[in-house]
Amino acid sequence: MTIPNRPSLADMMRLPLGEAASLPVEIMMLLQEEANEALRRAKTAKDWLDGALEHKYGAIAAEHRRIEGKDTGTVRFDDGGTTVVADLPKKVEWDQEQLAATVERIRASGDDPAEYVDLAFKVPERKYGAWPGHIRTAFEPARTVKAGKPTFALKPQSP
Image 1 (spheres, rainbow, N blue to C red):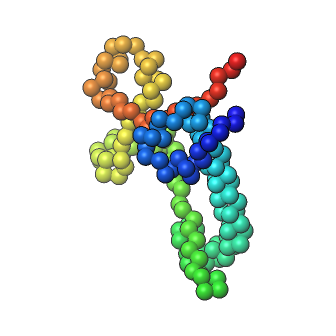
Image 2 (image 1 turned 90 degrees about the vertical axis):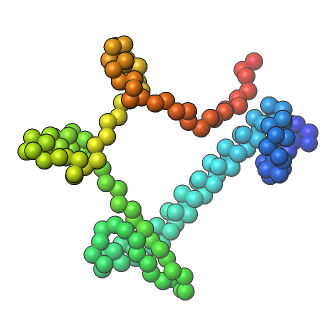
Image 3 (image 1 turned 180 degrees about the horizontal axis):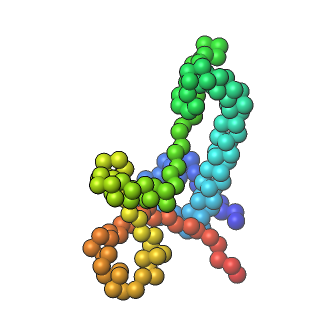
């Protein structure tokens, strides 16, 4: 779709929000496509650069962690007058069934599991919707519904 005098994303960013909102939907759709493509390209470029940095510094960072006696975390080293800060975050996952069993053993022994773990209950909305009415009614006082961030997708209509 060719639109004469179509503003670019850079042009749009200089407009007051109300003026940008008054643009024709066709232009907003094109700007949205342009923004999505720019985001995709930026993510691809960042992934590529992160890969190059890992290729260049990964083994050096691993050796520094080994010397410091740690498997994860942050290490610092120099490369030609530049300090490289290499972070390998710790990602811990817990087996929920085993945690529940351990919590029950703690509770059965007379201790308070809340002293050792944070207890949280989650109710998937899909399951909540499938519950019988009397069960939903029992849980409703504990349920709060909040709206998330709105999103809008602009797509051309099929002829």
